[in-house]
Length: 67
Image 1 (cartoon, rainbow, N blue to C red):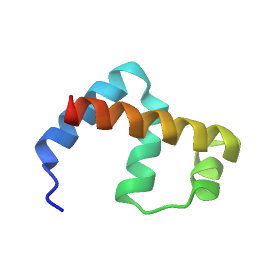
Image 2 (image 1 turned 90 degrees about the vertical axis):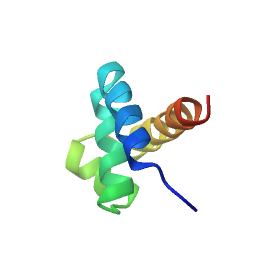
Image 3 (image 1 turned 180 degrees about the vertical axis):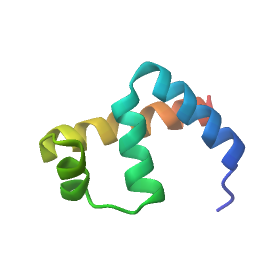
Image 4 (image 1 turned 120 degrees about the horizontal axis):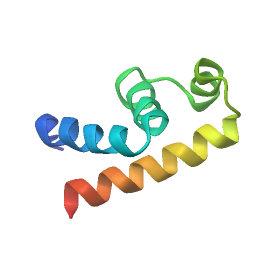
């Protein structure tokens, strides 16, 4: 599937302006390929919080990219 990296970068910038931690989670998950447990450790948050943030961030990006 084709990914428009410019649009993704712009959407990530919008997300970062709203919530920097959620944007960082996307970077760690999507670009670094870390598992949720590892992301939680890196950010010193619970795995559940990391998962919730990931879910919200994905929804945000989907809406921006397909809006």
